[in-house]
Image (cartoon, rainbow, N blue to C red; front, top):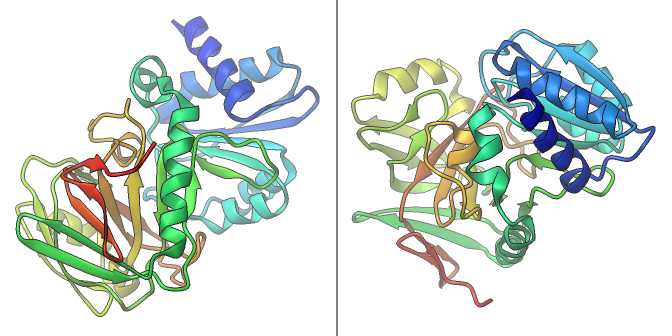
Length: 318
């Protein structure tokens, strides 16, 4: 089985990250990804790269900065695979490494199952097409509205640029999740108003059996209703910035499934996700030390007055 995983890892390094001979490949992994980390290490050697493995302790929460020695190693590498239990995507370490020219694929919560079924098996040219098209819509939009079950959440996007996580990281400084497939943006801080139903999954809680209702005022989460309220409040702690509405994202991967692992869940085609906490690494101004995504199934999404998603279906011309 490990040999098969290595074959997939080799394909990802070659096709999704364009790894070349003699490039420096850094694989960051932890106790949850031992086989996956070793597989990328072996695959990198087979492709002629200078492979390095760096095992770290689990960081505890998505968005927590890694130790300084890890951040420095990321800046020295040409290609970085961050296959860890918790996300390094929205960290200053990732941002600094990209600014130094590294191509980075973050894989928070990656499982062996994802290598053989689900989002990694997607047609990434198709994923890139939808993702880039949605990014352009986010770039030009001034306002977004999510509606579901009679609830509505509004936010201001004016002056903010969208991001396209296509899963193809070929250029210096490019980065995103792998598996991938999302267009996302940091809404203007202080602008989110209204209520929204989170009914797919939530970082730190997994797949939701019962929906949560979030209420926002002046950009912050001010009320939670649902049986998992106490668990979520414990994750957020006393940090007000952790309650900032940090992100609006749209899933574009038609092979992704709702599994309870946010890495895959937020990529599900036609879903919308919002995030709480940090957004300073992708166009916002808040550094909260935490980033929690919540997935909304079959929503309606308006960008300005254009219906972009209708009950989970992307309304885009091909």
